[in-house]
Amino acid sequence: MRWAHGRAADYATLSFGCGLANFLMMLYLVKFATDRLGLHAGVVGALFGASRVWDAISDPLVATYSDRPSGKGRRLRTIRLGAFALAASVVMLWAPPTLGTTTQAVWFGVAICFYFTAHTLVFVPYDAIGIEGPANEEERNRWFAFRAGAYGLASLAGVGLLFAASDQAYFGQAVALVGAVGIVVSGLYFTRDESRYPPGRNGDARAVYVGFREIIRDRVARLFFAVRFLQRLGSSALTSLAPFITALYLGNDESLPLIMGVYTAATLLTIFATPRTAAAVGTFRLWKLCIACTSLGLLGLCLTPRGALGPFMAIVLWTAVTGALLQVTERSVMAEIALSLEDKHALEARFAAVDTFLSKCAFGIAVAIGGAGLSAAGYTNDMAMAGAHEGMMRATIAGIPMLTFAAAAALALKVQRRVEPTPTDGPA
Image 1 (cartoon, rainbow, N blue to C red):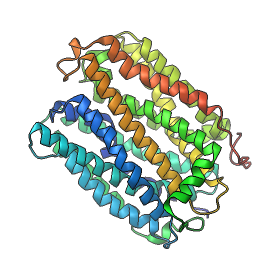
Image 2 (image 1 turned 90 degrees about the vertical axis):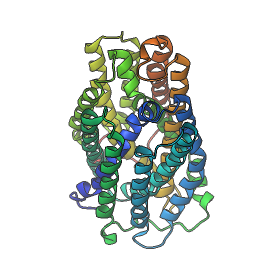
Image 3 (image 1 turned 180 degrees about the horizontal axis):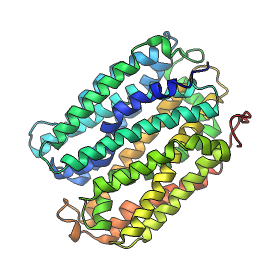
Image 4 (image 1 turned 180 degrees about the vertical axis):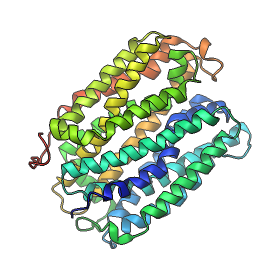
């Protein structure tokens, strides 16, 4: 099935609508929970980690439903339901009632589980549409560039909200309102016409475990998911600990909105040049190169002294460029591997579910490790940064991401493409 090029922007609308809430959840929720809700950093990390147990159950069920041969709207119906659930979970996370410490922790844990379940309902079928829709590698890169660019624009809106209201008492309520409205509006718009996104291959009515078994048996898929897990572990650690990174290296976290604005602007400028760059270099080769370059940038962060604004900003720009290229190429690589599986049934949603589950596991583990590291360093809140152990802080927020990206770069060298590119796809 060949989609018109104009559909790329249409496909990106859902990423834009959900982007602000997802960006602030990744970037600032840990900080919000510790400093505003009064939860211990270790408790927050443990709650994120524990929510992965439920994901292990919910993700396969959602993916199996999305892949079933139930008509052309099976994926869109799941997205529509998930959009309303995701909006409700955002309100629960950012505008909770005033509760005692223990009850607040329970509320937060339930809200986290609800959020990630709703996220699965939306993004597993959304990823599957991105896999089965474009006709070739060049078109896939264009689709994913538009998607990443839309997320970048939403992230800029999140940076603006941080800059305007992060120190205000109503900040959480503002995130809840803007985030929930964006999710519902984009979800309804994206699912307005079921005839626009017909399913690709034959639906799969087999048992839940069968499709996943076929995916896990594939050697290339296993290697790719291992790389993705390590890569997401490192990027999740960086994102969730960004406020603490600016506090450690620049002496305060008040400059976080400015730093993230520069990072996001550089990302946007790079994203829309990615399809052309991938065509010249090759999507697989560019993907592997960017992982290695990111690890080098994080090594530089480990060696950067406190207060060195110039080197710090250079590293921010370096990781923005490599991160932007990765956002597009990693999804294009995932789509090619999914479509090259020998199983001829529609496994796109299940393939996306494995990736989503591993990504959420990586985020949960990163937050758990980050929370434990901050606690071990002696961090309690933003007023206690000066008393924290610098060596432990540096190892937590820079050393761990650097090591995970280095391991991912080494493992990515073993991932080989099975399908030779067409003349429009670029070199391997």
